[in-house]
Image (cartoon, rainbow, N blue to C red; front, top):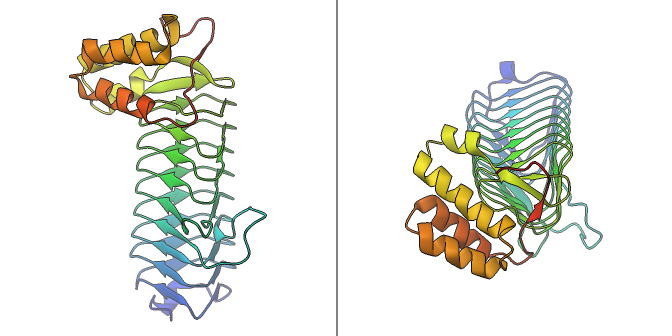
Length: 269
């Protein structure tokens, strides 16, 4: 059932019987919407975009030319089970970005609000994306990855399955992470910690006292020669009353894959 105004749907678009569109949704030429799909008010589906259900999306999402949202997971154990993608509000999926449905065990790939997925970026099955993240061109994440609010994945970056990318952290260009990247940290190369995202923290309104405390915690964990457990304990004792440090400590203590700690020459002092 299509509820959108017929003058907003290009005549060459193919829209299946299980699709429900808010009245002001626009669908461009040669777009394909097939399966159980719900698109909220203000959504725009560009030319040649493919949305394959089950997909539920909120308001004001823009699906640009050629993106593919909701196709089957790239997993050899997937056997056609009913799984889905859930998308919040005001997300932008640029040309040829791809988002895959979940696997049966969890059933969902979830994307929050106000995220930007640039050209050819990829979100694999069962991922959890927070709010206000940016995936630059060809940034790709494997299955079950968590990307927390405000994280920035630069161009041609890759994240291993089951990793967590902390809030306001940043992957530099052509970077790979096979371990968890703590909140506020920057990673370069492969698992090489490279300081903290001071600019991102300032833009997020984090006070300078907290930024400096996170810097001290970073130096303890990555440069002091202490074990991670001992360094985290010292950071907590010194600055654990500050929310940013407390967030960092809790994230590290919750890791299952270990954290990025390798050190690059010239990294943040």
